[in-house]
Structure formats: C-alpha cells, structure tokens
Image (cartoon, rainbow, N blue to C red; front, top):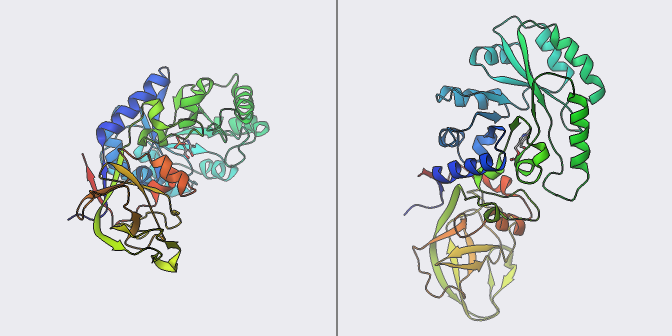
Length: 355
Ligand SMILES: Cc1ncc(COP(=O)(O)O)c(C=O)c1O
C-alpha cells in the first residue's frame, strides 16, 4: 500500500498552458519551473510543457538540470548572481541572464567567454529586484559597450496583480512603459495574475507559473472558473478508523475534543511529508467522495479527521489532501498559506507518479 502519493498529470499541465495561450494569444510563454517545477518536478513539467517557448528558473543549478535533461528551449535565470563561472556556463548552454543589480554589470565587464543573452530587469515599483528607472539609461550605455552581450529585452515584475482593485499595478505598468519607451528589445511583465487579469501586461513574453499547476493566484476567483486543472493530486491512505467516546481528546496536545461518540479516521500523511503542521481543525480532506474536517494537530506521519460525514470510508481507502475534487487553494486558505508553498514543501518521502 503506497503511503502519501503525488500524481502529476501531464495532460493537465498541457491544458493549463493552452489556457495561457488562449488568454494571451499574442505573447510568447516562458513557463516558470523554478523550485523544482513548483514542487511538481522541473524536468517532468518542462517535458509536459513542450509547447512553451521557453522556461524561467531561479538559478544556474535549475537551468543546468533542464539542459542536462535535454530541454533545448531558451531558459532565463531570474535571480542568479553572476561571476565568471556562471557567465561561462550561461554562454556555453545558451541560458538567458536577468540583470537586476550593478554587481552583475561588473562581472560582465570582465567576461571573455562565449556570447551571452540578457534581459534587463526594471524596478517599476515592487522594490525587490531591478534597476531604478532613472538608472536604466546608464545601464543600457554600459551594456552597449559589451561586445559579447546581446540585450534580449526588458522585464519587470508585478507586486499586486493578484488583487484586481489595487492601483499599484497600473502605476507599475505606466512606469515600465515610460522607462522602456524607445528602447529596442522584447518586453515581459506578466506572471500568472498578469495573464489572468491584466491584458495590458501581456506584452511580448508572459512568465506564468502557478496557473500552469492549476492554482488561481487571484484573490477573487478560483482556478476552475478559469478552466484550470490541478496538475498535482495528493493522496494518502486511511490507516485506521477508530470509535472514540464522547468528550475524549484527539492527538498531541489534546487540542480537540469529541462532541459525541464518533469515528475518527487516521490518514497516513503528516508534516514529515510536507502536509502543513499548522493546518487547523476544519481544514478539508476528501474521502469516499465527501469532504471531512481535519481535527486535532497534524503530526509527523498522520492526520486525524472527523468521519461522521463519511460513514462508508474504510481502512485502505485513499483520501485526497488536494487535487481532483479538493482545490489546493481552499486547503491553502485554511492553512493560512498559498498553494505555491504547499506544493514546494512536499518532502522526498512522498511517492511521485507521472501520468
Ligand atoms: C520574476 C518572476 N516572474 C514570474 C513568476 C511566476 O509567478 P506566478 O507563479 O505567480 O505566475 C515569478 C514567481 O515568483 C517571478 O519571480
């Protein structure tokens, strides 16, 4: 009997990419597969997304993992510092650099290896990475002197695109448009929220991540309403069904008490698998076709659930923690986090299967 299992659905990934194409028909798509494909397996995801125009990763290590697996599309490294080794590797493997800090320009000015391609990141208001708009003329002038470097385009990142009513997004779009006016090269702005809610942000290249995995980044709409499908189905077996008397407590810390004599189910997944320890009582779990609430504390190998609503659930049945039938975003809301984190924190103990 398999314990915690994550089934990765390549068809869902391809379908979600098709949704990106339908929403942003004029844009190339660089699929964000950083952090091991948001916990789904970077190579698995990149192979399933063979219709993408390129990929976005965080670091050189992540870029190399894809190239070594035979992925020959453009790969942009979003937050990689530069030194001689990194530049040489990027030149050799054709990785696209993202320039966001003067220290990177200094490294490029000493570089003598194979030709490089780079995006320049502009800080349009998020104030995390990127050159200040007033510095971009000088950056462009410095880059123009580098014979081995081609500037592919200009890039920025949106801080609040997941909340459609926030004014910051339009202001970022304005700053980026002003700063890039009259410069040659591609433009890239949109993450998933930009793809879903900000057509003006689509530009030449979109960089969706979370929507490809079937989660909605938007605060006001769920994934199904955008016709996105879950790419991960996380399940675990019911390993015990126990009758507990009324007024007894369940689990570590005795934090939850049975209101009646009732059946408690024990499911073989816990924080040792990456299920969030801080998921509170009430977090939904799907078993035998019904959602039942988690009760008591999450432990390393197990969670406990209230089975009063699932009279027919029996030992050996598989429960769904998220995926088909249980939206990961709903689980994330209960656990006071986001689907991105739930996906990324799964541990090697979870058995992955690709369908
Ligand atoms: C620069 C950049 N672009 C694109 C993305 C993809 O974002 P999302 O997963 O919200 O679509 C990220 C993710 O954090 C990012 O940092």
